[in-house]
Length: 250
Length: 130
Image (cartoon, rainbow over all chains, first blue to last red; front, side, top):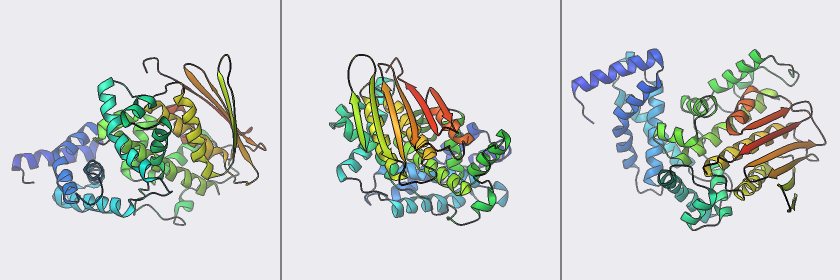
């Protein structure tokens, strides 16, 4: 992980620029410059029953998280700061690895396989594959493919540092059932407030998908993770947001 | 739950009635994406539909009522799937949030949320190249 003094200085400059502007292109450069660290840490958790592809995606997300939270003014090297964040994300993945609802093993396996197939077929065809094309490639029925896609919803990846239910969430967004005539501005505040409660990574996903209207495929390419993982994370984010909305409305 | 299919000339119409309870959202997503695959929708489009159906379901199941149902009317032709979902007995949508509106607008081609009537209609067109 050693790097030259010039490279270290360049990265320090990038962090300063990212903190000042929030420019996502700068952030992408930071990801590229530090990806080796994430992959290195992911390899340390290999052969424990989770695919290497999944581990690398989780570690990459940990890296994004660390980049968003890193404050270069504190004098800490980024690698020292990022390592516990990435390792924490990996450990959380192992802890939470499991299915919120009972999903047959063959569907779980197909779900994992689809992650690769979707990427391969999208590349080959130059467009998103149909469900039938995926089914043929996976040697499964179309119903099985749909169930495997649905499994993204059942794959639990709740984060350990998500605010617990019954915390201050209600007080932060004191809007109730009687506010049917909410003005657009108030409504926007609620959305901002809800989004503000999400982790930076999740905020980014929501922004890219629903505000910038990028496809899952485009987001996957941009973040360097699989489309299936984007799907899984989006499902979790939407679920979180829906629960928070329910909480504020009750 | 029951579903009836009415094959014949013109668009295929399928009706689906489910309890207005959160656990049935999965059934709604699976059934409706299953319908979409009949017309060759792509993985991306099916993912969008899953989100749209989940969002509509989430908006209409509040407040919970074990007696209430959600009635989906789906119309599938060669290039589009139209879904109209309404709660029975009718109940206004508690809150039409900007985020829900945004989400639907991002994932389908047409969306209408009738808050007072408790009705949501969406249309997803199949991309010509797919």
